[in-house]
Image 1 (cartoon, rainbow, N blue to C red):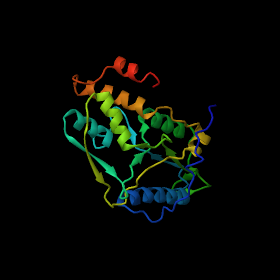
Image 2: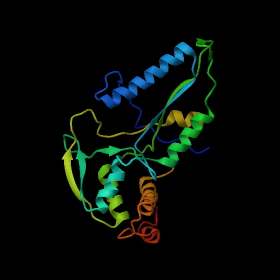
Image 3: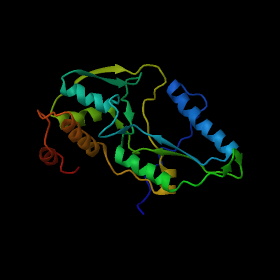
Image 4: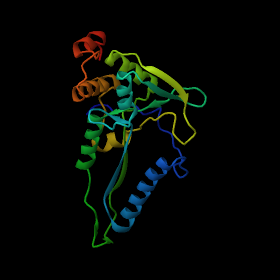
Length: 222
């Protein structure tokens, strides 16, 4: 088995009982409801926390997706900074790595212990982070897209609104690695290359976008 991801710098306990946004509150509420059903009815439950999933057939409302669309159309894109003008970073996780984590969680899931609405014994209850363990500044993501699309982005740098959103995310996946060997393998450059290839094919865009051979010659280390 491969060596575990280095999470020595990410282990930090934070309170989760005072969410700063409705989005965070719904996530917390979902996990607490799962805990209650597990406790009362003996349901075997597993929660998976996805960290900024991207890739082909992704959500059009995600930044990497509409950045690609707007860059190709020559429209300006908003790039957020923190209130103290630091870069916002996300733990971008390629879809293939997330799928591997989902399969691993399914393969190690146990049966429920409840029957007829009655609990007959302790049941499995797990929560895992599925991330890439490598936060990347959003500005870097834009730079990679500019290179892949062979088009300069029109950047509009603005400060992040004070709505509870976090300045960066960084997944500690040590539990997922321990329990089912989860280990992401796709870096952002490689993942975005696959996404852009899908995007231009799906939407029939052929102008300006670099071919795979051109990208490999410029980035032989990828």
